[in-house]
Image (cartoon, rainbow, N blue to C red; front, side, top):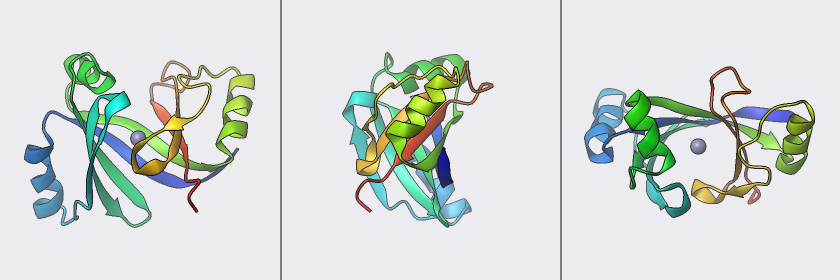
Length: 136
Ligand code: ZN
């Protein structure tokens, strides 16, 4: 597998409007995009720190993945996303090594990236996202 960098860190928040000012006014970052990802039942807000992004995730449905996460664990780090070259190959390689995949084939995430998640049961508790930007 060829990971190039940490693409983003996903953080679950109850409310984007309430949490964005912390990132802007305290950490001095700039929110450059707010986007709804309907099939993940989330609204996202993005910040950049060097090459890495912070992705805030607000649930739009209590039954969605972020809604359930907030209910169970509260606000906090939800997942870590690595940029990879060759997402399909990385997934089949990962599965062959006995790791449980949430997505066996890539799907579309925020910012037009192809993404897939590895199950935290197989990754020592860290929900892990692999993503590839096919637009570059
Ligand atoms: Zn993500």
